[in-house]
Length: 591
Image (cartoon, rainbow, N blue to C red; front, side, top):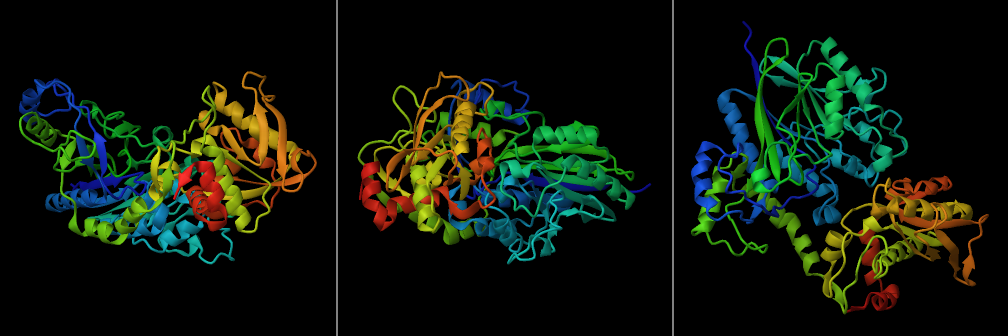
């Protein structure tokens, strides 16, 4: 009888440049000694802690150095057990922290290269700034990038670096109408691995127009059929489609053994007694396909052991997600009060014994790479003070009885000046309120506050020309989406520079914007000329017509998306000499 094929799969997803650990406040249900998530070994610690009722300690969670430590442990165990080890990343390593704002994909490529990944799939945030950052990324990584429904066949030959030229990229194969898959050897058997990304990528990211995405479901059907025709009966899909889409795909497509997913940040398993949101059991099975996902932000690591019989059927599956924590248990957010006597020791023991928690040290090599190579510039931004606010600046999405956002219009103004400085003859700027993430307190404001808190998303800014008759529609659509019950949320509410109007929120839909005017450098405020062509600037996200901004799609074909991010524009706005005095007066900023 043929020997079973035995593998161990470790997986992460949506790491979003969270290279360093995150401080997380837990809510420990220490009274629940019968909780199913707690092993018998943990019950003594639980009973000891029960007398303290619910406690809410802070712990240091995750980070790339801890992921590396745990992955090495799992790899070593797999070798001892005779299991083939695979380490997979289900996409979205870009964006998220100052590390990406400063270093873009270079830091991600260098740090992910330390992991010895088997493969990674393409996430939507990898394409927030177009194809160019991905082109650089794939030439820096030492593992395959699986993007099986991304059609690169018509990629422009004029590009300095073509993604399709990279040998480690596995895209859509037009002639076969399926994904290019990789083959991973497990003993005498072969496992096929292919990747899929959100097929409506153009709606949520910024792929270049010459590289479209094709239907994910049909690609999956065609790919599995051709894999099986090649004689391989063990199939892994590395997916960045989202959890619900993974469940639906598993139901619709026969023959996939395992889906390793991302995008929706789902943490499977029971973490309820830690106060952490989670969903479903680990390894939910649909149509003989096991589906796994491991949360977000490099806080947890998933792993599963899978046994296949000779027909490719999964005959054994066992695994879990693990929250990776440090040695300290603290009771203040500064992580300085770490006394482990009495109550603290009981909580420490409770966490140590929890089946879904692993306390592990940071890998020295990865930690040293972060600390010596990248952290100094992040720390410098944290210490680089652009000024001191005399009074707090309030941010609110939809204006209320206290007024509108005091920040968002200034962010729009920063786009205007940044684009004009680069030669674009801009007439107005529009920005969605959701692009600004916080208010600013009185006191010192650092570059890190701007790039890491106020405007953390490295979304590029674009310019476009549009006939005046459509501008009111942009504003109406964004406002309707922000306040209507069926809209996507208040983040779409528009703030502008060089446009002036009144909003009557209780007016009929489509007629809430009144007395719209535009500022002319010579004539001052003027009624909008519906026949005139104006140049506007907004984020590339808004320019896609998302979240009520569909009228912006009436722009002409001469639009351009630049490499300037929101934070880039605003930092320039508060520091460029010819703008600095006026800007600081508007902000109440003292240098």
